[in-house]
Image (cartoon, rainbow over all chains, first blue to last red; front, side):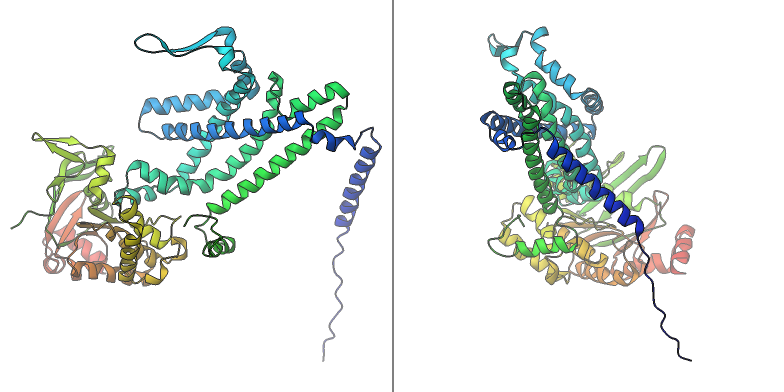
Length: 296
Length: 255
Protein backbone atom coordinates (compact mmCIF):
# COMPACT_ATOMS: atom_id res chain seq x y z
CA UNK A 1 0.00 0.00 0.00
CA UNK A 2 1.28 3.44 -0.93
CA UNK A 3 2.06 5.69 2.00
CA UNK A 4 0.71 9.21 1.61
CA UNK A 5 3.36 11.81 2.54
CA UNK A 6 1.97 13.49 5.65
CA UNK A 7 1.97 17.29 5.93
CA UNK A 8 4.64 18.71 8.23
CA UNK A 9 3.86 21.47 10.73
CA UNK A 10 6.94 23.56 11.48
CA UNK A 11 7.70 24.56 15.04
CA UNK A 12 6.46 28.09 15.80
CA UNK A 13 9.12 30.15 17.60
CA UNK A 14 6.75 32.21 19.72
CA UNK A 15 9.52 33.19 22.10
CA UNK A 16 11.51 34.79 19.30
CA UNK A 17 8.54 36.87 18.20
CA UNK A 18 7.84 38.04 21.74
CA UNK A 19 11.46 39.00 22.47
CA UNK A 20 11.85 40.75 19.08
CA UNK A 21 8.75 42.86 19.74
CA UNK A 22 10.01 43.65 23.23
CA UNK A 23 13.43 44.77 21.96
CA UNK A 24 11.98 46.95 19.20
CA UNK A 25 9.46 48.40 21.65
CA UNK A 26 12.15 49.31 24.16
CA UNK A 27 14.29 50.91 21.47
CA UNK A 28 11.30 52.93 20.25
CA UNK A 29 10.62 54.09 23.80
CA UNK A 30 14.26 55.16 24.13
CA UNK A 31 14.11 57.13 20.90
CA UNK A 32 10.87 58.83 21.90
CA UNK A 33 12.34 59.72 25.27
CA UNK A 34 15.49 61.16 23.71
CA UNK A 35 13.47 63.07 21.12
CA UNK A 36 11.37 64.52 23.92
CA UNK A 37 14.40 65.31 26.06
CA UNK A 38 15.55 68.91 26.15
CA UNK A 39 18.59 68.32 23.98
CA UNK A 40 19.62 70.81 21.35
CA UNK A 41 20.51 68.15 18.79
CA UNK A 42 21.32 70.69 16.09
CA UNK A 43 24.22 72.05 18.12
CA UNK A 44 26.01 68.69 18.45
CA UNK A 45 27.59 68.72 14.95
CA UNK A 46 28.84 72.26 15.61
CA UNK A 47 30.51 71.20 18.85
CA UNK A 48 32.11 68.24 17.11
CA UNK A 49 34.02 70.67 14.90
CA UNK A 50 34.79 73.32 17.54
CA UNK A 51 38.44 74.31 17.55
CA UNK A 52 38.97 73.25 21.17
CA UNK A 53 37.31 69.91 20.38
CA UNK A 54 39.79 69.32 17.55
CA UNK A 55 42.65 70.21 19.89
CA UNK A 56 41.18 67.69 22.35
CA UNK A 57 40.96 65.06 19.64
CA UNK A 58 44.59 65.58 18.63
CA UNK A 59 45.74 65.35 22.26
CA UNK A 60 43.67 62.24 22.91
CA UNK A 61 45.14 60.48 19.88
CA UNK A 62 48.68 61.70 20.64
CA UNK A 63 48.46 60.60 24.28
CA UNK A 64 47.09 57.19 23.37
CA UNK A 65 49.50 56.49 20.51
CA UNK A 66 52.64 57.65 22.33
CA UNK A 67 51.66 55.95 25.61
CA UNK A 68 50.83 52.67 23.85
CA UNK A 69 54.07 52.76 21.82
CA UNK A 70 56.18 53.42 24.90
CA UNK A 71 54.24 50.70 26.77
CA UNK A 72 54.91 48.15 24.02
CA UNK A 73 58.65 48.95 24.01
CA UNK A 74 58.92 48.73 27.81
CA UNK A 75 56.65 45.68 27.83
CA UNK A 76 58.95 43.78 25.46
CA UNK A 77 61.98 44.59 27.62
CA UNK A 78 60.22 43.58 30.87
CA UNK A 79 58.90 40.37 29.27
CA UNK A 80 62.42 39.45 28.10
CA UNK A 81 63.75 40.19 31.58
CA UNK A 82 61.15 37.88 33.11
CA UNK A 83 62.33 35.10 30.81
CA UNK A 84 66.03 35.78 31.29
CA UNK A 85 68.47 33.53 33.12
CA UNK A 86 69.46 36.39 35.40
CA UNK A 87 67.54 35.97 38.70
CA UNK A 88 67.86 39.68 39.55
CA UNK A 89 66.30 40.62 36.20
CA UNK A 90 63.45 38.15 36.80
CA UNK A 91 62.91 39.55 40.26
CA UNK A 92 62.96 43.15 39.00
CA UNK A 93 60.53 42.42 36.17
CA UNK A 94 58.09 40.67 38.49
CA UNK A 95 58.24 43.59 40.93
CA UNK A 96 57.74 46.10 38.12
CA UNK A 97 54.61 44.33 36.90
CA UNK A 98 53.32 43.90 40.45
CA UNK A 99 53.71 47.62 41.21
CA UNK A 100 52.44 49.25 38.02
CA UNK A 101 49.56 46.85 37.59
CA UNK A 102 48.60 47.19 41.22
CA UNK A 103 48.10 50.97 41.39
CA UNK A 104 45.07 52.76 39.88
CA UNK A 105 46.12 54.68 36.80
CA UNK A 106 44.58 57.91 38.14
CA UNK A 107 46.72 57.63 41.25
CA UNK A 108 49.83 57.04 39.12
CA UNK A 109 49.07 60.13 37.02
CA UNK A 110 48.56 62.25 40.14
CA UNK A 111 51.89 61.05 41.57
CA UNK A 112 53.75 62.08 38.41
CA UNK A 113 51.86 65.37 38.27
CA UNK A 114 52.77 66.21 41.85
CA UNK A 115 56.36 65.02 41.68
CA UNK A 116 57.63 68.60 41.97
CA UNK A 117 56.29 68.76 45.54
CA UNK A 118 58.90 66.29 46.76
CA UNK A 119 61.63 66.51 44.11
CA UNK A 120 61.86 70.17 43.06
CA UNK A 121 64.65 69.73 40.50
CA UNK A 122 65.64 66.78 38.37
CA UNK A 123 69.34 66.57 37.63
CA UNK A 124 71.75 64.11 36.10
CA UNK A 125 75.26 65.17 37.11
CA UNK A 126 78.21 64.51 34.82
CA UNK A 127 81.26 62.77 36.31
CA UNK A 128 83.63 65.79 36.04
CA UNK A 129 81.33 68.63 37.11
CA UNK A 130 78.39 70.14 35.28
CA UNK A 131 75.06 68.56 34.51
CA UNK A 132 73.63 66.56 31.65
CA UNK A 133 70.24 67.62 32.91
CA UNK A 134 69.30 70.12 35.61
CA UNK A 135 65.76 71.49 35.39
CA UNK A 136 62.89 72.26 37.75
CA UNK A 137 60.61 69.21 37.89
CA UNK A 138 57.45 71.15 37.12
CA UNK A 139 59.02 72.39 33.88
CA UNK A 140 60.00 68.86 32.81
CA UNK A 141 56.82 67.13 33.91
CA UNK A 142 53.95 69.10 32.39
CA UNK A 143 50.38 67.91 32.79
CA UNK A 144 50.64 66.20 29.40
CA UNK A 145 53.89 64.47 30.37
CA UNK A 146 52.46 63.36 33.71
CA UNK A 147 49.43 61.85 31.98
CA UNK A 148 51.70 60.22 29.40
CA UNK A 149 53.94 58.71 32.09
CA UNK A 150 51.01 57.43 34.13
CA UNK A 151 49.22 55.88 31.16
CA UNK A 152 52.36 54.43 29.54
CA UNK A 153 53.87 52.89 32.68
CA UNK A 154 50.56 51.42 33.80
CA UNK A 155 49.98 49.91 30.35
CA UNK A 156 53.59 48.68 30.09
CA UNK A 157 52.94 46.27 32.96
CA UNK A 158 50.00 44.78 31.06
CA UNK A 159 51.99 44.72 27.80
CA UNK A 160 54.79 42.84 29.55
CA UNK A 161 52.36 40.06 30.42
CA UNK A 162 50.83 40.05 26.93
CA UNK A 163 54.26 39.84 25.28
CA UNK A 164 55.35 37.13 27.70
CA UNK A 165 52.27 35.07 26.88
CA UNK A 166 53.03 35.56 23.18
CA UNK A 167 56.67 34.49 23.53
CA UNK A 168 55.64 31.46 25.60
CA UNK A 169 53.17 30.45 22.89
CA UNK A 170 55.99 29.84 20.39
CA UNK A 171 57.22 26.25 20.59
CA UNK A 172 60.79 25.87 21.87
CA UNK A 173 61.51 23.74 18.80
CA UNK A 174 61.39 26.94 16.72
CA UNK A 175 64.23 28.43 18.76
CA UNK A 176 66.23 25.21 18.53
CA UNK A 177 65.79 25.08 14.77
CA UNK A 178 66.94 28.70 14.50
CA UNK A 179 69.99 27.91 16.65
CA UNK A 180 70.77 24.86 14.54
CA UNK A 181 71.17 27.00 11.41
CA UNK A 182 73.51 29.31 13.27
CA UNK A 183 71.15 32.17 14.10
CA UNK A 184 72.25 34.38 16.99
CA UNK A 185 69.85 34.93 19.92
CA UNK A 186 68.93 38.42 18.65
CA UNK A 187 68.28 37.21 15.11
CA UNK A 188 66.25 34.28 16.45
CA UNK A 189 64.05 36.64 18.45
CA UNK A 190 63.55 39.09 15.56
CA UNK A 191 63.09 36.65 12.69
CA UNK A 192 61.58 33.55 14.28
CA UNK A 193 60.04 34.03 17.71
CA UNK A 194 58.51 37.54 17.70
CA UNK A 195 56.77 37.23 14.31
CA UNK A 196 55.06 34.06 15.48
CA UNK A 197 54.30 35.49 18.91
CA UNK A 198 52.45 38.34 17.15
CA UNK A 199 49.44 36.13 16.51
CA UNK A 200 48.96 35.89 20.25
CA UNK A 201 50.13 39.43 21.07
CA UNK A 202 48.04 41.50 18.64
CA UNK A 203 44.44 40.79 19.71
CA UNK A 204 44.86 41.72 23.40
CA UNK A 205 47.11 44.64 22.43
CA UNK A 206 44.40 46.00 20.12
CA UNK A 207 41.95 45.59 22.97
CA UNK A 208 44.27 47.49 25.30
CA UNK A 209 44.75 50.25 22.73
CA UNK A 210 41.00 50.80 22.51
CA UNK A 211 41.01 50.95 26.30
CA UNK A 212 43.92 53.41 26.15
CA UNK A 213 42.07 55.73 23.73
CA UNK A 214 39.20 55.96 26.19
CA UNK A 215 41.47 55.91 29.24
CA UNK A 216 43.12 59.19 28.17
CA UNK A 217 39.93 60.88 29.44
CA UNK A 218 41.42 60.48 32.91
CA UNK A 219 44.00 63.13 31.95
CA UNK A 220 41.19 65.72 32.07
CA UNK A 221 41.51 65.57 35.86
CA UNK A 222 44.90 67.31 35.74
CA UNK A 223 43.81 69.74 33.03
CA UNK A 224 45.15 68.15 29.84
CA UNK A 225 42.97 69.34 26.96
CA UNK A 226 41.88 66.01 25.63
CA UNK A 227 38.39 65.26 24.32
CA UNK A 228 36.55 65.12 27.64
CA UNK A 229 38.30 68.22 28.99
CA UNK A 230 37.51 70.02 25.75
CA UNK A 231 33.84 69.10 26.11
CA UNK A 232 33.82 70.43 29.67
CA UNK A 233 35.51 73.62 28.45
CA UNK A 234 32.75 74.26 25.95
CA UNK A 235 29.90 73.42 28.31
CA UNK A 236 31.27 75.64 31.07
CA UNK A 237 30.63 78.58 28.72
CA UNK A 238 27.25 77.63 27.25
CA UNK A 239 25.91 75.16 29.83
CA UNK A 240 24.95 72.68 27.05
CA UNK A 241 26.50 69.80 29.02
CA UNK A 242 24.82 66.88 27.28
CA UNK A 243 25.34 68.27 23.79
CA UNK A 244 29.08 68.71 24.29
CA UNK A 245 29.41 65.29 25.91
CA UNK A 246 27.68 63.76 22.87
CA UNK A 247 30.09 65.64 20.61
CA UNK A 248 33.01 64.09 22.50
CA UNK A 249 31.27 60.69 22.28
CA UNK A 250 31.15 61.01 18.49
CA UNK A 251 34.92 61.47 18.33
CA UNK A 252 35.59 58.58 20.72
CA UNK A 253 33.49 56.28 18.55
CA UNK A 254 35.34 57.45 15.43
CA UNK A 255 38.85 56.81 16.79
CA UNK A 256 37.87 53.52 18.44
CA UNK A 257 36.35 52.30 15.17
CA UNK A 258 39.48 53.25 13.24
CA UNK A 259 41.60 51.40 15.83
CA UNK A 260 39.40 48.35 15.30
CA UNK A 261 40.11 48.40 11.56
CA UNK A 262 43.84 48.72 12.26
CA UNK A 263 43.74 45.71 14.57
CA UNK A 264 41.87 43.68 11.97
CA UNK A 265 44.50 44.52 9.33
CA UNK A 266 47.41 43.60 11.63
CA UNK A 267 45.80 40.31 12.59
CA UNK A 268 45.42 39.46 8.92
CA UNK A 269 49.03 40.32 8.22
CA UNK A 270 50.39 38.00 10.89
CA UNK A 271 48.01 35.15 10.16
CA UNK A 272 49.66 34.16 6.88
CA UNK A 273 50.73 30.72 8.05
CA UNK A 274 47.31 29.15 8.29
CA UNK A 275 45.28 27.59 5.56
CA UNK A 276 42.04 29.48 6.04
CA UNK A 277 40.34 30.63 2.85
CA UNK A 278 40.83 34.25 3.85
CA UNK A 279 44.55 33.76 4.39
CA UNK A 280 44.94 32.04 1.04
CA UNK A 281 42.99 34.79 -0.71
CA UNK A 282 45.29 37.34 0.92
CA UNK A 283 48.32 35.43 -0.33
CA UNK A 284 46.88 35.24 -3.83
CA UNK A 285 46.28 39.00 -3.77
CA UNK A 286 49.86 39.58 -2.75
CA UNK A 287 51.06 37.82 -5.88
CA UNK A 288 49.33 40.42 -8.07
CA UNK A 289 51.57 43.38 -8.95
CA UNK A 290 50.64 46.76 -7.47
CA UNK A 291 48.69 45.11 -4.67
CA UNK A 292 51.62 44.46 -2.40
CA UNK A 293 50.01 44.62 1.00
CA UNK A 294 52.78 42.77 2.75
CA UNK A 295 56.34 41.71 2.33
CA UNK A 296 56.91 38.17 1.10
CA UNK B 1 94.30 7.56 9.70
CA UNK B 2 93.28 11.20 9.32
CA UNK B 3 91.94 13.37 12.13
CA UNK B 4 88.25 12.54 12.76
CA UNK B 5 85.70 15.21 11.80
CA UNK B 6 83.82 14.68 15.06
CA UNK B 7 85.45 13.67 18.28
CA UNK B 8 83.43 13.48 21.49
CA UNK B 9 85.41 12.65 24.61
CA UNK B 10 83.95 11.62 27.97
CA UNK B 11 80.61 13.39 27.56
CA UNK B 12 78.71 13.54 30.83
CA UNK B 13 75.35 15.13 31.44
CA UNK B 14 72.84 14.97 34.25
CA UNK B 15 69.44 16.52 34.74
CA UNK B 16 69.18 17.03 38.47
CA UNK B 17 69.97 13.69 40.07
CA UNK B 18 69.44 11.76 36.86
CA UNK B 19 72.69 10.83 35.07
CA UNK B 20 71.65 10.85 31.43
CA UNK B 21 75.12 10.47 29.92
CA UNK B 22 77.86 8.67 31.85
CA UNK B 23 80.94 9.35 29.79
CA UNK B 24 80.39 8.87 26.05
CA UNK B 25 83.26 8.69 23.54
CA UNK B 26 82.64 8.80 19.82
CA UNK B 27 84.76 9.44 16.75
CA UNK B 28 83.29 10.01 13.33
CA UNK B 29 85.45 10.41 10.24
CA UNK B 30 84.60 12.42 7.15
CA UNK B 31 81.97 10.73 5.02
CA UNK B 32 81.02 8.25 7.69
CA UNK B 33 77.45 7.51 8.74
CA UNK B 34 77.01 6.52 12.36
CA UNK B 35 73.65 5.33 13.68
CA UNK B 36 72.86 5.54 17.38
CA UNK B 37 70.50 2.78 18.47
CA UNK B 38 69.11 1.92 21.85
CA UNK B 39 66.01 1.83 24.03
CA UNK B 40 64.24 5.12 24.81
CA UNK B 41 65.81 6.83 27.78
CA UNK B 42 69.26 5.62 26.78
CA UNK B 43 70.43 9.21 26.25
CA UNK B 44 70.82 9.06 22.46
CA UNK B 45 68.98 12.29 21.74
CA UNK B 46 70.60 14.12 24.62
CA UNK B 47 74.01 13.03 23.35
CA UNK B 48 73.16 14.28 19.86
CA UNK B 49 72.03 17.64 21.29
CA UNK B 50 75.31 17.93 23.16
CA UNK B 51 77.19 17.65 19.87
CA UNK B 52 75.97 21.06 18.66
CA UNK B 53 75.74 22.53 22.15
CA UNK B 54 71.94 22.70 22.26
CA UNK B 55 72.55 21.11 25.65
CA UNK B 56 75.45 22.19 27.83
CA UNK B 57 77.81 19.43 28.86
CA UNK B 58 78.74 18.74 32.49
CA UNK B 59 82.06 17.11 31.62
CA UNK B 60 83.90 16.13 28.47
CA UNK B 61 84.50 17.87 25.17
CA UNK B 62 83.15 17.88 21.66
CA UNK B 63 85.54 18.65 18.80
CA UNK B 64 84.29 19.26 15.29
CA UNK B 65 86.88 19.78 12.57
CA UNK B 66 89.52 20.38 15.23
CA UNK B 67 87.54 23.06 17.09
CA UNK B 68 86.02 22.62 20.57
CA UNK B 69 82.24 23.21 20.36
CA UNK B 70 80.99 25.79 22.84
CA UNK B 71 84.52 26.75 23.79
CA UNK B 72 87.58 28.52 22.53
CA UNK B 73 91.06 27.09 22.96
CA UNK B 74 93.51 29.74 24.24
CA UNK B 75 96.74 29.14 26.17
CA UNK B 76 95.96 25.47 26.69
CA UNK B 77 92.65 26.38 28.31
CA UNK B 78 89.06 26.08 27.11
CA UNK B 79 87.16 29.34 27.52
CA UNK B 80 83.38 29.09 27.40
CA UNK B 81 81.92 30.99 24.45
CA UNK B 82 78.97 33.39 24.36
CA UNK B 83 75.80 32.11 22.68
CA UNK B 84 76.51 34.44 19.74
CA UNK B 85 79.87 32.74 19.14
CA UNK B 86 78.42 29.26 19.58
CA UNK B 87 75.88 30.20 16.91
CA UNK B 88 78.77 30.70 14.47
CA UNK B 89 80.10 27.23 15.25
CA UNK B 90 76.66 25.73 14.61
CA UNK B 91 76.71 26.91 10.99
CA UNK B 92 78.84 23.88 10.17
CA UNK B 93 76.60 21.41 12.01
CA UNK B 94 73.19 20.75 10.51
CA UNK B 95 70.42 19.31 12.62
CA UNK B 96 67.14 17.61 11.71
CA UNK B 97 64.56 17.30 14.46
CA UNK B 98 61.95 14.69 15.29
CA UNK B 99 59.19 17.35 15.15
CA UNK B 100 60.60 19.01 11.97
CA UNK B 101 60.49 22.50 13.57
CA UNK B 102 60.02 24.33 10.29
CA UNK B 103 59.40 28.04 10.80
CA UNK B 104 55.61 28.09 10.70
CA UNK B 105 55.28 31.66 9.45
CA UNK B 106 57.50 31.11 6.41
CA UNK B 107 57.06 29.15 3.21
CA UNK B 108 59.16 26.10 2.40
CA UNK B 109 61.47 28.22 0.22
CA UNK B 110 61.73 30.95 2.88
CA UNK B 111 62.64 28.29 5.43
CA UNK B 112 65.45 27.07 3.21
CA UNK B 113 66.91 30.50 2.33
CA UNK B 114 66.57 32.05 5.81
CA UNK B 115 69.93 30.75 7.02
CA UNK B 116 71.97 31.49 3.89
CA UNK B 117 70.60 35.06 3.61
CA UNK B 118 70.45 36.10 7.27
CA UNK B 119 73.37 34.13 8.70
CA UNK B 120 75.81 33.64 5.82
CA UNK B 121 74.94 36.86 3.97
CA UNK B 122 74.31 35.15 0.63
CA UNK B 123 72.66 37.38 -1.99
CA UNK B 124 68.88 36.66 -2.17
CA UNK B 125 69.01 35.78 -5.90
CA UNK B 126 71.73 33.22 -5.39
CA UNK B 127 70.12 31.84 -2.22
CA UNK B 128 66.89 31.38 -4.17
CA UNK B 129 68.64 29.53 -6.94
CA UNK B 130 70.45 27.24 -4.51
CA UNK B 131 67.26 26.85 -2.48
CA UNK B 132 65.38 25.67 -5.52
CA UNK B 133 68.12 23.13 -6.29
CA UNK B 134 67.91 21.85 -2.71
CA UNK B 135 64.12 21.59 -2.77
CA UNK B 136 64.47 19.74 -6.06
CA UNK B 137 66.95 17.41 -4.44
CA UNK B 138 64.42 16.46 -1.74
CA UNK B 139 61.71 16.17 -4.41
CA UNK B 140 59.77 19.32 -3.50
CA UNK B 141 60.76 21.83 -6.18
CA UNK B 142 57.07 22.55 -6.84
CA UNK B 143 56.13 23.15 -3.17
CA UNK B 144 58.41 26.12 -2.46
CA UNK B 145 55.45 28.45 -1.89
CA UNK B 146 53.65 26.12 0.50
CA UNK B 147 53.53 26.91 4.21
CA UNK B 148 54.53 24.10 6.59
CA UNK B 149 50.90 23.63 7.68
CA UNK B 150 50.04 22.81 4.05
CA UNK B 151 52.66 20.05 3.82
CA UNK B 152 52.52 16.46 5.03
CA UNK B 153 54.88 15.35 7.78
CA UNK B 154 57.17 13.65 5.30
CA UNK B 155 57.29 16.75 3.10
CA UNK B 156 57.97 18.98 6.11
CA UNK B 157 60.85 16.77 7.18
CA UNK B 158 62.34 16.85 3.68
CA UNK B 159 62.12 20.66 3.68
CA UNK B 160 63.82 20.61 7.09
CA UNK B 161 66.65 18.54 5.60
CA UNK B 162 66.94 21.02 2.71
CA UNK B 163 67.01 23.89 5.24
CA UNK B 164 69.95 22.25 7.03
CA UNK B 165 71.78 21.49 3.79
CA UNK B 166 71.43 25.12 2.69
CA UNK B 167 74.04 26.02 5.31
CA UNK B 168 76.50 23.64 3.57
CA UNK B 169 77.28 21.85 6.84
CA UNK B 170 80.27 19.60 7.37
CA UNK B 171 78.27 17.36 9.67
CA UNK B 172 74.58 16.48 9.84
CA UNK B 173 72.80 15.37 13.01
CA UNK B 174 69.46 13.56 12.75
CA UNK B 175 67.36 13.28 15.91
CA UNK B 176 64.82 10.49 15.27
CA UNK B 177 63.86 12.07 11.94
CA UNK B 178 61.10 9.58 11.15
CA UNK B 179 59.63 8.91 14.61
CA UNK B 180 56.85 11.51 14.27
CA UNK B 181 55.82 10.35 10.80
CA UNK B 182 52.92 8.19 9.68
CA UNK B 183 54.33 4.79 8.63
CA UNK B 184 53.68 5.36 4.92
CA UNK B 185 55.70 8.61 4.98
CA UNK B 186 58.85 7.16 6.57
CA UNK B 187 60.22 5.83 3.28
CA UNK B 188 60.42 9.18 1.46
CA UNK B 189 62.50 10.71 4.27
CA UNK B 190 64.80 7.70 4.56
CA UNK B 191 65.33 7.80 0.78
CA UNK B 192 66.59 11.39 1.02
CA UNK B 193 68.87 10.46 3.92
CA UNK B 194 70.17 7.45 2.01
CA UNK B 195 71.08 9.58 -1.00
CA UNK B 196 72.83 12.07 1.31
CA UNK B 197 74.85 9.24 2.80
CA UNK B 198 75.80 8.03 -0.66
CA UNK B 199 76.95 11.54 -1.58
CA UNK B 200 79.44 11.33 1.25
CA UNK B 201 77.78 13.52 3.89
CA UNK B 202 79.06 12.87 7.41
CA UNK B 203 76.03 11.92 9.46
CA UNK B 204 75.15 10.98 13.02
CA UNK B 205 71.66 9.53 13.13
CA UNK B 206 69.54 8.64 16.15
CA UNK B 207 66.94 6.25 14.80
CA UNK B 208 64.70 3.29 15.47
CA UNK B 209 64.77 2.28 11.80
CA UNK B 210 66.96 -0.83 11.97
CA UNK B 211 66.59 -1.32 8.22
CA UNK B 212 68.04 2.10 7.50
CA UNK B 213 70.88 1.53 9.96
CA UNK B 214 71.71 -1.81 8.36
CA UNK B 215 71.78 -0.29 4.89
CA UNK B 216 73.29 3.17 5.34
CA UNK B 217 75.45 3.04 8.48
CA UNK B 218 79.20 2.51 8.41
CA UNK B 219 79.07 1.97 12.13
CA UNK B 220 76.40 1.33 14.72
CA UNK B 221 76.62 2.56 18.28
CA UNK B 222 74.33 0.83 20.71
CA UNK B 223 73.56 2.87 23.83
CA UNK B 224 71.73 1.98 27.03
CA UNK B 225 71.42 3.82 30.36
CA UNK B 226 73.69 6.68 29.32
CA UNK B 227 76.61 4.50 28.20
CA UNK B 228 77.81 2.94 24.98
CA UNK B 229 77.20 -0.80 25.25
CA UNK B 230 78.82 -1.85 22.01
CA UNK B 231 79.83 -0.44 18.68
CA UNK B 232 80.86 -1.87 15.33
CA UNK B 233 79.85 -2.33 11.69
CA UNK B 234 76.12 -3.03 11.23
CA UNK B 235 76.62 -6.59 9.96
CA UNK B 236 78.29 -7.50 13.25
CA UNK B 237 76.26 -5.48 15.79
CA UNK B 238 72.92 -6.33 14.19
CA UNK B 239 73.66 -9.97 13.28
CA UNK B 240 76.03 -11.09 16.03
CA UNK B 241 75.65 -8.73 18.98
CA UNK B 242 78.11 -9.41 21.80
CA UNK B 243 76.09 -8.03 24.66
CA UNK B 244 72.90 -9.30 26.22
CA UNK B 245 71.40 -5.75 26.29
CA UNK B 246 71.86 -5.44 22.55
CA UNK B 247 70.36 -8.87 21.90
CA UNK B 248 67.30 -8.08 24.03
CA UNK B 249 66.80 -4.74 22.27
CA UNK B 250 67.14 -6.18 18.79
CA UNK B 251 64.84 -9.08 19.63
CA UNK B 252 62.16 -6.62 20.76
CA UNK B 253 62.57 -4.21 17.83
CA UNK B 254 62.74 -6.87 15.14
CA UNK B 255 59.95 -8.98 16.64
